[in-house]
Image (tube, rainbow, N blue to C red; front, side):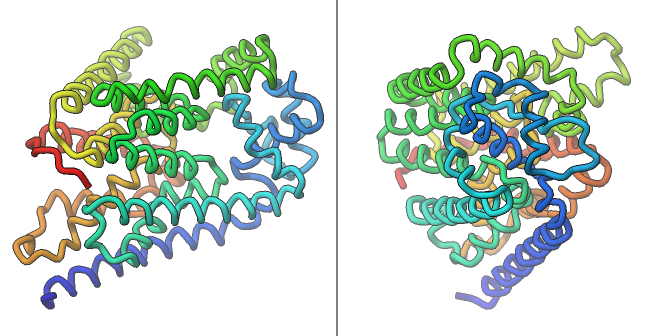
Amino acid sequence: MTAFVQKRKFLVAAFLLAMTFCNLTLLFRVMPLLKNGYQDFTIFYTAARLLRSGQASTLYNLATQYRMQLTFTHVPIRQGPLPFNHPPFEALLFLPFTRLEYWPAYLLWTALNLIMLAVSVTLLRRHFSQFAAVPPLILGLGATAFYPVAMGIIQGQDMILLLLLFVLAVIRLDRGNDAVAGALLAACLFRPQLALPLVVLLAIRRWRVFVGFVPVAFVLAGISVVIVGWRGLLDYARFVLRLEGTPAARAFGPESVPNLRGLVEQLVPGFISSGAVIALLICASSVVVFLVAMRRIHHGRDSIIYLSSLAAVTTILVSFHALVYDLCLLLPMSLCLLSRTVDVREKEKKLDAWVFLLVVLMFLAPLHMLLWLVVDRYFWFSLVLLWLYLRLVLAPAPAEVPA
């Protein structure tokens, strides 16, 4: 290995270590707030507590959720609940955590998230050649330096679980087990706004994905009916729709979502005042982005890791809700970009400027913090995702090579 390659690896590792330190600094600053229940883990613990206390029929009642949260959180600035707006079956996953008090339950879920993150990175390195030449230390630092992953873990969100299921599904696709991959994607339906676009995009290349997806989706729907009843499912649908007009939905506002909805709703009103026209522009741009990605996936001969990266970026761009921790879905693609910066092959000494810039933008924690926490304009990050999308869509399609 030449001194040039060693220097490049050292610089990349130093950058990732600095970004990891930024994320840890944020964690230590918010630790007192976490003990009081400010984080999103509150919604899962609330839903599980309601199930355990026999109040499943009121799972989507905001007043009931708030009363339950008051029993284990202390958030003076909160005048209402953090709403549990996920499908009923997900509440079962967190039922065992209610055997513990809130803070120990959160610590246990955080430990499980860290384990799932480590397993995801290990599986990627073991099964795909793009990661095999990258030192484990750099891949590990890449995972901890990625701000969406840090926020997902700090908030106690379920996105690390979705990331693991997504990685497993991609591996199964690469091995030709399309039905198993579909079943794994169906298990992601606790985030339907992400799972559904993903499965459609990947199934356009491998239609047998639906063979595994549909039965598991029906089973999860049946479990939800058992938990809350048919009426409860209707309550869930109405709850999600009504949530848009409540103060609790401010976190989902267009200024906070790094997708086409956020970009159009924030930039277009300066030229067009009609809400109907803006909604039409959002729908039209989302359809175009989705169809172009479908065409590339269907007709291209790219590797599965490449197609899954395109599917993940497209899913974030077209989803209605896409908060900072939802970008955990982009970790495999971000690590792919990272691997190109530490390529040990002699002929790859010259690093493409766009790869370097994308790596910096994706992993630059202060940029994420500025847009998300300081100025509350995270929709600007959708421009980075659009750039990634265009690079993936327009890149020449090589012959597919198995892992």
